[in-house]
Length: 429
Ligand SMILES: *Cc1c(COP(=O)(O)O)cnc(C)c1O
Image 1 (spheres, protein in one colour):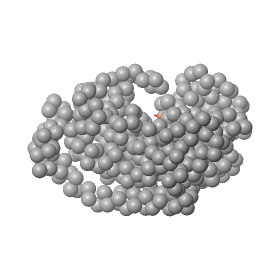
Image 2: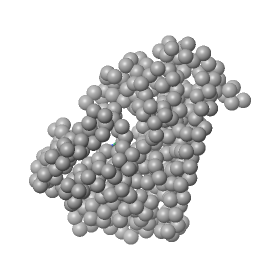
Image 3: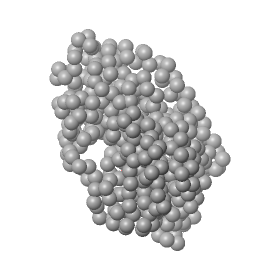
Image 4: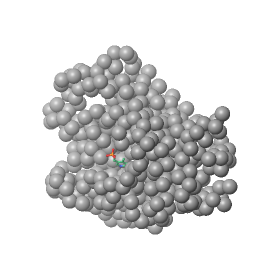
């Protein structure tokens, strides 16, 4: 029956058999991921119980949103789960870039310097910082930027970091996930090492972690190893696929307060900001997030094993431990990259009949192809694949609200490559 429905969906016997053989080797890996999800699930439940989440929390508010009990309780749940003093979790934070821009702009003042000790930050942050000029960038407000690249082998350049820290250095931005770069994603322990070093050089530097894609992939989060503030998007891991919008900032009380004063207004801060009707989805999404993240991790591991066996460069490598949900596959071939994305799209529950086309996107300096048939537009905790359409034609694949969907997506991507003779068929049959 299972084989039949795969066939009806367009997966041929050869591709299915190959995929099933790969999957059989992964039982132990998957068990480790399930164990981590179990732990994180309990962490979330514990935080919800501690804060006495009740039906009253789901009522929401309109207008100013004063005394929005559900919103305030949810922020306490986030703070407890991620081990911060306070949290800002709002639908008024429109996306991850906005959350990061907010955290930076509210905690920096003219004359300050922000430093990245892990190389170039995520593409969209270039305009936030002013690495690429933009209206309203930090640079326009007289906030300077310095950067220390990772060493050739992916390790921290401690000497370079020490040299880069000066009187003006107020905040350090550490990106946990590799994003669109080809460098290792940082484990929480690695982030801890980096934070300790930075604080040993200058104790009052604010260490901010761009936590996008990292939440719940490990049993702890960066605040537990000394970071001051973590920042992320609710249409990635912590929204569990249900949050239709939103971002979060969790950490030191003062950092969060600064952000709240900037998001709403000086003097108003966290007191305003109606949650409208979205709060139940924030709660339920956060509740599901550990197992949804686990599904995405399994999908990433399945994909890396498949494509590594077929001779493509995959990153992280199949056997590597995971610290985020992103898997990249490098094709060095435009057609293969687009075929992969077509497969992901064709496996989607929504918009499966459309073909993804490369397109210019705000915040990116070249065409980008994006495959996603998502319930929430642009959600990348849902199964999605994207990448800049230029050499080396690397596709970044992530998400999957359920593992069976992630598996179908990967098999379908392989099917498209197979049908167009873009893979070595001898390795499959
Ligand atoms: C997704 C992402 C962002 C930006 O988030 P958007 O919601 O796309 O604006 C920033 N940093 C990293 C590492 C990301 O993965």
